[in-house]
Length: 93
Image 1 (cartoon, rainbow, N blue to C red):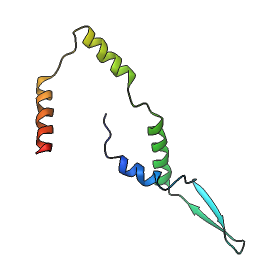
Image 2 (image 1 turned 120 degrees about the vertical axis):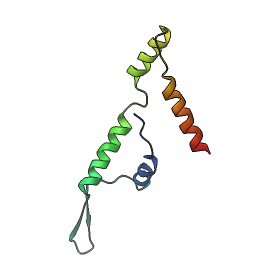
Image 3 (image 1 turned 45 degrees about the vertical axis):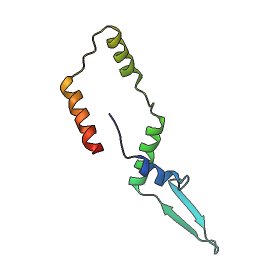
Image 4 (image 1 turned 90 degrees about the horizontal axis):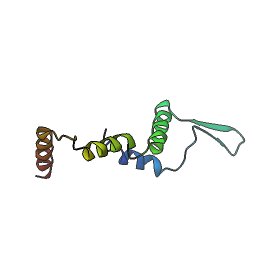
């Protein structure tokens, strides 16, 4: 699976610094103001942390492909290959 276009969203959060789920700030008069982060932001933060912890390379898939190539059992789907080549060429022009 290829996940694209996350860099912009990640930059928006990374550039802001670390934000705790609930941050309390005392005002000059001694009263406390509270800031609550939405559930959507908490979910996004949890997903972002999971993505950061996940490996960039799926070892099982890489090893299976290496084995099939070594055994001469790896088959290329010609139609998919041609479709991808055409798709990339169309994007360039």
